[in-house]
Length: 362
Ligand code: 9MR
Image (cartoon, rainbow, N blue to C red):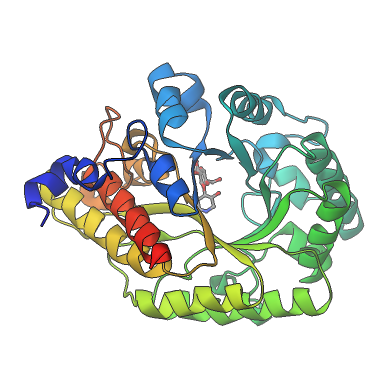
């Protein structure tokens, strides 16, 4: 029995470490034993703070570009290609012996104003050129690419639930298949991923997106498009309804089609949890543990990525600064705190990885 205190201090992780394990237990080593790659998104915060970069070196097996490969970051103006931040990630990964995952090639959100002003024909030309140049630059070096991110956003009120934006406006839903075919022709090695949000949540929103994504996957496969993996972001929301056994069945459905599944942007929005820090951290860990116990039971899941590693650099901090969530508190959604100390969430993740390892041996 693990005491509440052990859970809160992270000591539970070491209590569960098998005696034969070589070296100190990390998220990456526990994941690896479970047949999983563990990674985290990374950006300039890690390159400006060596202690943070050390945390990535120690705890992860994969670096995932957070913002560096997004269209608006790479192409702030039509004639500017700002590859430096993405190059830095790929170079650091090479130096540190890590895998790299590219996020994200094509997304209808966050398009720069200059792109929105172009004609449909010009947008198609920019689309093809973008894929060729960006995928080409890193060809052969990436484990996987999020080729298309978040194709569905029913709130945009388009028929079929599609997310609106310049690519969709110019090409309709055909942009998705076109992106996969182009990317595969430039980098036949990377695993090409379709990444989607909200499917983990059991409310109307998540439930409306699940069949849309499944339908798109079936159409892509029927047409022979090169699709290898499904990314399910899994930004867990404490305030939304959940039914993780059901979600696991959904995940298994992709596995049955021969696809890998990636938990691609994991973190826990703690907005609905108690204010007191220890209680909140325990609630975050418990929710994550419940989620992972279900979803990692699916053999289709091959990868778990958190969106950053330390609370200090979570995207939720920015959201909270704008007062959109959290009533002025600082969100604590990640496995390490502001000072890079392990939190109960890290212990819960390691426990879930260990449980999968035990399950696989049965
Ligand atoms: O972490 C990213 C944040 O720094 C950016 O401001 C934001 C907009 O580009 O995107 C964040 O990452 C998002 C990811 O690309 C797609 N899924 C949701 C993530 C969190 O918003």
